[in-house]
Length: 187
Image (cartoon, rainbow, N blue to C red):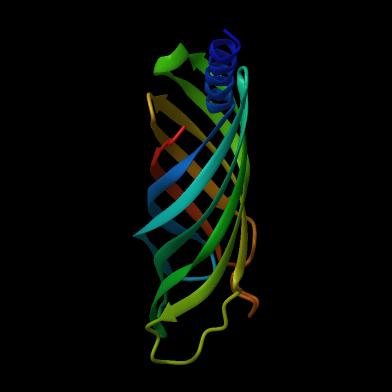
């Protein structure tokens, strides 16, 4: 009888822990737009990213941390000077706080969230033949978004507004990233 009670207690404890903490991988699709008035034209670019996430659930609220690798691509051009294509790659870390606006029980939920993202661009590639362009390697962004959890899948749309000026030469270049991610929760 003691073994049965111990086994039942462990099963209930593991199930409660699985609902409290969730983790897993995610892939993302990014559309990066440069925010600047210092260039004559600009264009957005698309890229991919991968990450791992861990989420702590507390009734209707949750907190989530992510660590991953992502790319950003965009172009800037100046009349009479030329166009530069940027490809930025590196690690990023994200902290999110959210609220489950429509809890659907074990099926999932619909969520709203805000957070902070920090990127370290360890690989910066440009195709400008005119001169070397110095670029800030660290980028900080605030983010907001909406997400849906269905069973073990998590689908998020988030908008990241960069507040770091990436061009230290005096011209103002920030990023705006629309991100769509799909994740799988192991627990």
